[in-house]
Image (cartoon, rainbow, N blue to C red):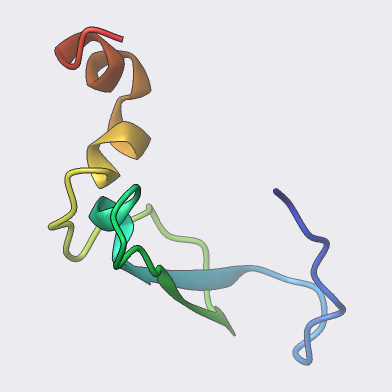
Length: 73
């Protein structure tokens, strides 16, 4: 699902984004509740950085083909 962003307060330019998800690996369980947190702020263009990745599901976003292959999908 995608959603267009409203105009950002700092106007056009480059931005950084921080996306935090809690509960990704609980899909299909009775306790499955994802918490999402998104921050966007103006900043110079830089290479992307993954600060911390502890979810097994996160591996899908790094290499979807390997994720599928490792799970026999």
